[in-house]
Length: 378
Image 1 (cartoon, one colour):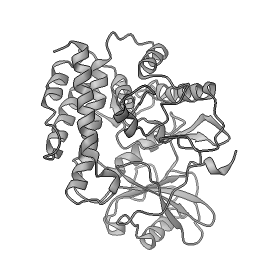
Image 2 (cartoon, helix red, strand yellow; image 1 turned 180 degrees about the vertical axis):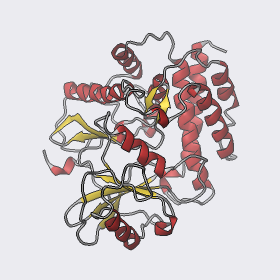
Image 3 (cartoon, one colour; image 1 turned 120 degrees about the vertical axis):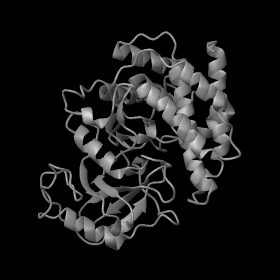
Protein backbone atom coordinates (compact mmCIF):
# COMPACT_ATOMS: atom_id res chain seq x y z
CA UNK A 1 0.00 0.00 0.00
CA UNK A 2 1.20 3.53 -0.76
CA UNK A 3 2.93 5.35 2.09
CA UNK A 4 0.67 8.30 1.22
CA UNK A 5 -2.04 6.83 3.47
CA UNK A 6 0.26 6.56 6.52
CA UNK A 7 -0.42 9.22 9.15
CA UNK A 8 2.31 11.86 9.36
CA UNK A 9 3.12 14.69 11.72
CA UNK A 10 3.31 18.26 10.41
CA UNK A 11 5.09 21.48 11.34
CA UNK A 12 5.00 22.41 15.02
CA UNK A 13 2.28 24.94 15.86
CA UNK A 14 3.39 28.44 16.81
CA UNK A 15 3.77 28.74 20.57
CA UNK A 16 4.06 24.96 21.04
CA UNK A 17 7.74 24.50 20.17
CA UNK A 18 9.92 22.06 22.13
CA UNK A 19 13.31 22.89 23.60
CA UNK A 20 14.78 20.15 21.47
CA UNK A 21 18.33 20.53 22.76
CA UNK A 22 17.13 19.87 26.31
CA UNK A 23 14.91 16.98 25.23
CA UNK A 24 17.61 15.41 23.08
CA UNK A 25 20.23 15.57 25.84
CA UNK A 26 17.89 14.12 28.46
CA UNK A 27 16.52 11.41 26.20
CA UNK A 28 19.89 10.14 25.01
CA UNK A 29 20.97 9.81 28.63
CA UNK A 30 17.70 8.14 29.66
CA UNK A 31 17.89 5.56 26.87
CA UNK A 32 21.58 4.81 27.31
CA UNK A 33 22.83 1.49 28.63
CA UNK A 34 23.42 3.12 32.03
CA UNK A 35 19.69 3.64 32.55
CA UNK A 36 18.07 1.10 30.26
CA UNK A 37 17.11 -1.46 32.91
CA UNK A 38 15.65 0.98 35.45
CA UNK A 39 11.95 0.17 35.36
CA UNK A 40 10.95 -1.88 38.41
CA UNK A 41 10.03 1.01 40.70
CA UNK A 42 9.12 3.55 38.00
CA UNK A 43 11.73 6.22 38.85
CA UNK A 44 11.88 9.65 37.25
CA UNK A 45 13.93 8.30 34.34
CA UNK A 46 11.68 5.24 34.02
CA UNK A 47 12.45 3.07 31.01
CA UNK A 48 10.37 0.03 30.05
CA UNK A 49 12.28 -1.88 27.41
CA UNK A 50 14.75 -4.74 27.50
CA UNK A 51 17.90 -3.00 26.29
CA UNK A 52 19.50 0.34 25.46
CA UNK A 53 18.63 2.50 22.48
CA UNK A 54 21.42 4.63 21.06
CA UNK A 55 19.83 7.60 19.30
CA UNK A 56 21.85 8.98 16.42
CA UNK A 57 22.10 12.65 15.43
CA UNK A 58 19.81 15.56 16.18
CA UNK A 59 16.09 14.81 15.73
CA UNK A 60 13.75 16.49 13.29
CA UNK A 61 10.69 17.55 15.30
CA UNK A 62 7.15 17.59 13.93
CA UNK A 63 3.78 17.66 15.64
CA UNK A 64 0.61 15.66 15.20
CA UNK A 65 -2.33 17.87 14.33
CA UNK A 66 -5.00 15.56 15.73
CA UNK A 67 -6.24 15.91 19.30
CA UNK A 68 -7.00 18.94 21.42
CA UNK A 69 -5.57 18.00 24.80
CA UNK A 70 -1.96 16.90 25.30
CA UNK A 71 0.62 17.93 22.72
CA UNK A 72 2.12 15.07 20.72
CA UNK A 73 5.37 15.27 18.73
CA UNK A 74 7.37 12.98 16.46
CA UNK A 75 11.14 12.96 16.96
CA UNK A 76 12.84 11.55 13.86
CA UNK A 77 16.43 10.51 14.58
CA UNK A 78 18.81 9.15 11.97
CA UNK A 79 18.21 5.57 13.12
CA UNK A 80 14.72 5.58 14.64
CA UNK A 81 11.63 7.63 15.39
CA UNK A 82 9.89 8.07 18.74
CA UNK A 83 6.80 9.87 19.99
CA UNK A 84 6.86 12.49 22.77
CA UNK A 85 3.77 13.57 24.72
CA UNK A 86 3.59 16.51 27.07
CA UNK A 87 0.89 18.56 28.79
CA UNK A 88 -0.29 21.80 27.15
CA UNK A 89 0.59 25.21 28.50
CA UNK A 90 -1.85 27.16 30.67
CA UNK A 91 -4.13 26.41 33.60
CA UNK A 92 -5.08 22.75 33.85
CA UNK A 93 -7.99 21.04 35.60
CA UNK A 94 -6.99 19.12 38.72
CA UNK A 95 -5.79 15.65 37.75
CA UNK A 96 -5.73 16.45 34.02
CA UNK A 97 -2.68 16.07 31.76
CA UNK A 98 -0.85 13.80 34.22
CA UNK A 99 1.98 12.45 32.11
CA UNK A 100 3.33 10.20 34.86
CA UNK A 101 -0.03 8.52 35.31
CA UNK A 102 -0.55 8.10 31.56
CA UNK A 103 2.91 6.56 31.19
CA UNK A 104 2.58 4.20 34.16
CA UNK A 105 -0.90 3.07 33.17
CA UNK A 106 0.22 2.05 29.68
CA UNK A 107 3.34 0.38 31.08
CA UNK A 108 1.16 -1.71 33.40
CA UNK A 109 -1.46 -2.52 30.76
CA UNK A 110 0.93 -3.47 27.95
CA UNK A 111 1.41 -7.14 29.06
CA UNK A 112 -2.34 -7.88 28.94
CA UNK A 113 -3.56 -5.62 26.13
CA UNK A 114 -1.71 -5.99 22.86
CA UNK A 115 -2.69 -2.62 21.38
CA UNK A 116 -0.81 -0.43 23.90
CA UNK A 117 2.39 1.21 22.53
CA UNK A 118 5.71 0.37 24.18
CA UNK A 119 6.67 2.96 26.79
CA UNK A 120 10.30 4.13 26.58
CA UNK A 121 11.02 6.91 29.07
CA UNK A 122 9.29 9.27 31.50
CA UNK A 123 10.65 12.65 32.60
CA UNK A 124 9.22 14.22 35.75
CA UNK A 125 12.01 16.77 36.12
CA UNK A 126 10.54 20.25 35.38
CA UNK A 127 14.01 21.68 34.79
CA UNK A 128 14.20 19.92 31.40
CA UNK A 129 11.33 21.62 29.52
CA UNK A 130 9.20 23.01 32.34
CA UNK A 131 6.67 20.17 32.42
CA UNK A 132 6.50 16.37 32.61
CA UNK A 133 6.69 14.40 29.38
CA UNK A 134 7.14 10.84 28.23
CA UNK A 135 8.47 9.09 25.14
CA UNK A 136 7.08 5.94 23.53
CA UNK A 137 7.49 3.84 20.43
CA UNK A 138 6.11 5.18 17.18
CA UNK A 139 3.31 3.09 15.71
CA UNK A 140 3.37 3.65 11.97
CA UNK A 141 0.02 3.26 10.30
CA UNK A 142 -3.24 4.80 9.15
CA UNK A 143 -5.18 7.04 11.55
CA UNK A 144 -8.88 7.12 10.57
CA UNK A 145 -9.59 10.79 11.15
CA UNK A 146 -12.52 12.78 9.75
CA UNK A 147 -12.04 11.11 6.39
CA UNK A 148 -10.03 8.08 5.39
CA UNK A 149 -6.91 8.98 3.39
CA UNK A 150 -7.34 9.50 -0.33
CA UNK A 151 -6.19 6.53 -2.37
CA UNK A 152 -7.21 4.01 0.27
CA UNK A 153 -9.06 1.15 -1.43
CA UNK A 154 -12.44 0.90 0.23
CA UNK A 155 -15.71 -1.00 -0.07
CA UNK A 156 -18.82 -1.16 2.08
CA UNK A 157 -17.86 -4.64 3.29
CA UNK A 158 -14.34 -3.50 4.22
CA UNK A 159 -15.73 -0.48 6.04
CA UNK A 160 -18.06 -2.69 8.08
CA UNK A 161 -15.13 -4.96 8.92
CA UNK A 162 -13.09 -1.94 9.99
CA UNK A 163 -15.97 -0.77 12.16
CA UNK A 164 -16.43 -4.11 13.93
CA UNK A 165 -12.66 -4.58 14.35
CA UNK A 166 -12.40 -1.19 16.05
CA UNK A 167 -15.31 -2.09 18.34
CA UNK A 168 -13.71 -5.47 19.03
CA UNK A 169 -10.55 -3.73 20.25
CA UNK A 170 -12.67 -1.85 22.80
CA UNK A 171 -14.46 -5.05 23.79
CA UNK A 172 -11.10 -6.80 24.21
CA UNK A 173 -10.03 -4.06 26.61
CA UNK A 174 -13.24 -4.39 28.61
CA UNK A 175 -12.70 -8.14 28.91
CA UNK A 176 -9.25 -7.81 30.49
CA UNK A 177 -9.29 -9.42 33.94
CA UNK A 178 -7.77 -6.44 35.72
CA UNK A 179 -7.61 -8.19 39.10
CA UNK A 180 -5.75 -11.20 37.75
CA UNK A 181 -3.44 -8.88 35.80
CA UNK A 182 -2.62 -6.93 38.95
CA UNK A 183 -4.16 -3.69 37.69
CA UNK A 184 -6.34 -2.80 40.68
CA UNK A 185 -4.18 0.27 41.26
CA UNK A 186 -5.39 1.91 38.03
CA UNK A 187 -8.47 3.40 39.67
CA UNK A 188 -10.86 3.38 42.61
CA UNK A 189 -13.37 1.12 40.86
CA UNK A 190 -16.67 0.87 42.77
CA UNK A 191 -18.60 4.14 42.91
CA UNK A 192 -17.27 5.15 39.51
CA UNK A 193 -20.66 6.28 38.16
CA UNK A 194 -21.33 8.70 40.99
CA UNK A 195 -17.78 10.06 40.86
CA UNK A 196 -18.05 10.71 37.14
CA UNK A 197 -21.36 12.55 37.34
CA UNK A 198 -20.29 14.73 40.27
CA UNK A 199 -16.80 15.21 38.86
CA UNK A 200 -17.79 16.28 35.36
CA UNK A 201 -20.54 18.51 36.74
CA UNK A 202 -18.02 20.29 38.93
CA UNK A 203 -15.46 20.56 36.14
CA UNK A 204 -18.05 22.03 33.78
CA UNK A 205 -19.14 24.61 36.36
CA UNK A 206 -15.55 25.66 37.04
CA UNK A 207 -14.71 26.01 33.33
CA UNK A 208 -17.96 27.74 32.34
CA UNK A 209 -17.63 30.95 30.35
CA UNK A 210 -20.36 33.54 29.83
CA UNK A 211 -21.30 32.28 26.36
CA UNK A 212 -22.31 28.68 27.17
CA UNK A 213 -25.37 27.26 29.00
CA UNK A 214 -25.34 26.39 32.72
CA UNK A 215 -26.24 22.73 31.90
CA UNK A 216 -28.02 22.49 35.26
CA UNK A 217 -30.98 20.54 33.84
CA UNK A 218 -28.67 17.92 32.34
CA UNK A 219 -26.53 17.61 35.47
CA UNK A 220 -29.61 17.22 37.69
CA UNK A 221 -31.10 14.59 35.36
CA UNK A 222 -27.91 12.54 35.35
CA UNK A 223 -27.74 12.65 39.13
CA UNK A 224 -31.35 11.47 39.45
CA UNK A 225 -31.04 8.70 36.86
CA UNK A 226 -27.79 6.97 37.79
CA UNK A 227 -28.14 3.17 37.29
CA UNK A 228 -28.45 1.14 40.47
CA UNK A 229 -25.69 -1.25 39.36
CA UNK A 230 -22.35 -0.88 37.62
CA UNK A 231 -19.67 -3.19 36.26
CA UNK A 232 -16.01 -2.35 36.68
CA UNK A 233 -13.30 -2.97 34.09
CA UNK A 234 -10.39 -1.16 32.46
CA UNK A 235 -11.89 1.74 30.50
CA UNK A 236 -10.17 3.94 27.91
CA UNK A 237 -12.54 6.92 28.24
CA UNK A 238 -11.48 8.57 24.99
CA UNK A 239 -12.05 5.74 22.55
CA UNK A 240 -12.41 7.08 19.01
CA UNK A 241 -11.37 6.08 15.52
CA UNK A 242 -8.68 8.77 15.51
CA UNK A 243 -7.10 7.19 18.56
CA UNK A 244 -6.71 3.90 16.69
CA UNK A 245 -3.77 2.98 14.43
CA UNK A 246 -4.51 0.75 11.42
CA UNK A 247 -2.18 -1.59 9.58
CA UNK A 248 -1.09 0.26 6.39
CA UNK A 249 -0.92 -3.08 4.53
CA UNK A 250 -4.48 -4.02 5.54
CA UNK A 251 -6.34 -1.06 6.92
CA UNK A 252 -9.12 -3.08 8.56
CA UNK A 253 -6.57 -4.52 11.04
CA UNK A 254 -5.87 -2.66 14.30
CA UNK A 255 -2.21 -2.33 15.37
CA UNK A 256 -2.55 0.11 18.25
CA UNK A 257 -4.78 2.22 20.47
CA UNK A 258 -3.50 5.65 21.55
CA UNK A 259 -4.22 8.46 24.03
CA UNK A 260 -4.65 6.79 27.44
CA UNK A 261 -4.76 10.01 29.46
CA UNK A 262 -8.25 9.35 30.84
CA UNK A 263 -8.10 5.56 31.21
CA UNK A 264 -9.03 4.08 34.56
CA UNK A 265 -11.13 1.38 36.22
CA UNK A 266 -14.70 2.27 35.35
CA UNK A 267 -18.02 1.17 33.93
CA UNK A 268 -17.79 -0.26 30.38
CA UNK A 269 -21.20 1.08 29.31
CA UNK A 270 -20.10 4.58 30.27
CA UNK A 271 -16.97 4.04 28.18
CA UNK A 272 -19.20 3.07 25.26
CA UNK A 273 -21.34 6.16 25.87
CA UNK A 274 -18.19 8.27 25.70
CA UNK A 275 -17.23 6.69 22.38
CA UNK A 276 -20.70 7.22 20.89
CA UNK A 277 -20.65 10.94 21.75
CA UNK A 278 -18.21 11.30 18.83
CA UNK A 279 -20.13 8.92 16.55
CA UNK A 280 -21.87 10.78 13.71
CA UNK A 281 -24.34 8.73 11.68
CA UNK A 282 -24.69 9.44 7.97
CA UNK A 283 -28.28 10.66 8.51
CA UNK A 284 -27.45 13.06 11.37
CA UNK A 285 -28.15 16.79 11.06
CA UNK A 286 -25.78 19.27 9.46
CA UNK A 287 -24.44 20.47 12.82
CA UNK A 288 -23.38 16.95 13.72
CA UNK A 289 -21.80 16.54 10.30
CA UNK A 290 -19.89 19.81 10.75
CA UNK A 291 -18.31 18.48 13.95
CA UNK A 292 -17.58 14.99 12.65
CA UNK A 293 -13.98 13.91 13.30
CA UNK A 294 -14.09 10.23 12.33
CA UNK A 295 -15.39 8.35 9.26
CA UNK A 296 -18.51 6.89 10.91
CA UNK A 297 -20.70 8.34 8.13
CA UNK A 298 -19.38 5.94 5.47
CA UNK A 299 -21.57 3.20 3.96
CA UNK A 300 -20.90 0.05 5.95
CA UNK A 301 -20.42 1.80 9.30
CA UNK A 302 -22.80 0.75 12.05
CA UNK A 303 -25.21 3.36 13.42
CA UNK A 304 -25.08 4.31 17.09
CA UNK A 305 -28.01 1.99 17.84
CA UNK A 306 -26.33 -0.85 15.94
CA UNK A 307 -23.10 -0.23 17.86
CA UNK A 308 -24.93 -0.60 21.18
CA UNK A 309 -26.61 -3.81 19.96
CA UNK A 310 -23.31 -5.25 18.66
CA UNK A 311 -21.44 -4.38 21.84
CA UNK A 312 -24.08 -5.79 24.17
CA UNK A 313 -24.26 -9.02 22.16
CA UNK A 314 -20.47 -9.49 22.21
CA UNK A 315 -20.22 -8.62 25.90
CA UNK A 316 -23.34 -10.66 26.76
CA UNK A 317 -24.94 -7.65 28.44
CA UNK A 318 -28.69 -6.96 28.56
CA UNK A 319 -29.78 -3.32 28.74
CA UNK A 320 -33.28 -1.95 28.18
CA UNK A 321 -32.44 1.74 27.87
CA UNK A 322 -29.08 3.27 26.92
CA UNK A 323 -30.22 6.89 27.46
CA UNK A 324 -28.27 7.49 30.68
CA UNK A 325 -25.02 6.41 29.02
CA UNK A 326 -25.80 8.42 25.88
CA UNK A 327 -26.49 11.62 27.84
CA UNK A 328 -23.48 11.07 30.08
CA UNK A 329 -21.20 10.68 27.06
CA UNK A 330 -22.52 13.86 25.43
CA UNK A 331 -22.32 15.89 28.65
CA UNK A 332 -18.83 14.66 29.43
CA UNK A 333 -17.72 15.65 25.92
CA UNK A 334 -19.25 19.08 26.52
CA UNK A 335 -17.20 19.29 29.72
CA UNK A 336 -13.99 18.35 27.93
CA UNK A 337 -14.68 20.84 25.15
CA UNK A 338 -15.45 23.57 27.67
CA UNK A 339 -12.20 22.99 29.55
CA UNK A 340 -10.34 23.35 26.26
CA UNK A 341 -12.35 26.41 25.25
CA UNK A 342 -11.71 27.98 28.67
CA UNK A 343 -7.98 27.97 27.93
CA UNK A 344 -8.58 29.60 24.53
CA UNK A 345 -11.08 32.11 25.93
CA UNK A 346 -8.54 33.25 28.52
CA UNK A 347 -5.61 33.42 26.11
CA UNK A 348 -3.78 30.38 27.46
CA UNK A 349 -3.60 28.84 23.98
CA UNK A 350 -3.85 30.42 20.54
CA UNK A 351 -4.85 27.31 18.61
CA UNK A 352 -7.50 28.62 16.16
CA UNK A 353 -9.23 25.23 16.14
CA UNK A 354 -10.69 26.07 19.56
CA UNK A 355 -12.22 29.42 18.61
CA UNK A 356 -15.79 28.17 18.04
CA UNK A 357 -15.90 25.39 20.63
CA UNK A 358 -18.55 27.33 22.55
CA UNK A 359 -20.99 26.67 19.69
CA UNK A 360 -20.19 22.96 19.82
CA UNK A 361 -20.97 22.97 23.57
CA UNK A 362 -24.41 24.49 22.90
CA UNK A 363 -25.05 21.73 20.39
CA UNK A 364 -23.94 18.89 22.69
CA UNK A 365 -26.18 20.12 25.50
CA UNK A 366 -29.09 20.44 23.06
CA UNK A 367 -28.58 16.79 22.14
CA UNK A 368 -28.54 15.86 25.84
CA UNK A 369 -31.88 17.58 26.38
CA UNK A 370 -33.33 16.00 23.24
CA UNK A 371 -32.37 12.50 24.43
CA UNK A 372 -33.72 13.21 27.92
CA UNK A 373 -37.07 14.34 26.50
CA UNK A 374 -37.31 11.28 24.22
CA UNK A 375 -36.63 8.96 27.18
CA UNK A 376 -39.63 10.20 29.12
CA UNK A 377 -37.59 10.00 32.35
CA UNK A 378 -37.72 12.97 34.68
